[in-house]
Structure formats: structure tokens, C-alpha cells
Image (tube, rainbow, N blue to C red):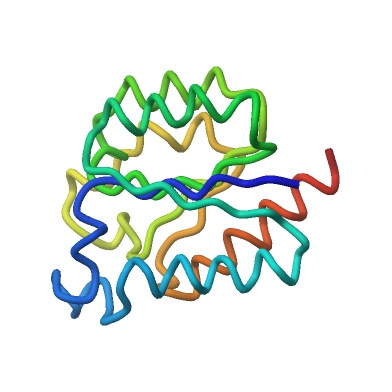
Length: 145
């Protein structure tokens, strides 16, 4: 099984950006946690990070021929990127939406996700633990078919 972990805008600033909300772990730390779980689950996991909406859309579109599933932390794009949502909607594999914080416990504008309705599941609010949880979840989804 092959899974693509997508990281959106400003996640490269993790560890220094609002650690009271996002914790002190860097994006590299979180990707490592995901890879560790992927090894246990026998998943080949690749990570792609970009602050460019078009690059993330392109990554989803290219993933259709190479990956069985996508874990996506679209960051702020979660709330307004219809182009990313449309790319994920046309992706034939499994999709897990991931958030470090719980958007529903934050500012009102974060309560709406344009990605959730095309995802097979959402993991949010568990901090760095969410990354291995997302890998375990997509592994189970892929095993079920």
C-alpha cells in the first residue's frame, strides 16, 4: 500500500508558530511519527509539503496513478480551497483529513471544512498523536477495500 501525506500552507512553521495551539513538534517530527506508524502498518508513505494551493492540487491529481490513499492536512486551505476539494473528490483512493488542533473548538471561520465531505474520515484535535492515528486509520480503510 502506498499513501501520500500532504501538508499545506504554514505547516513548515510548526514548532515556532503558535506552539500553544500546534505544539512544539516540527513538521519533520510529525512526518517521522507518521512514517514510524507506516512502517508498522507496512505502508509506503511519502510526504509532500507546499504552501502553494496549485502544487497541492497537482500532487493530488498525480497521486491517482501512484497512491492508494491520501492523508491531507490542508491547513487554512481546508476552509476555502474548492480546487483542492475538487481534486480530492475526483481521487479514486481513500482520503483522511487531518488537523493538529480541533477546528471546531477555535474561531468560527475554522468551523467549515470544504474537504470533509469528500474525505472518508477526519482526525482532529489530537496534536502530534493525530499523525500516527491518521496512518492507522487509512491503513484500516485500505485493508477493508
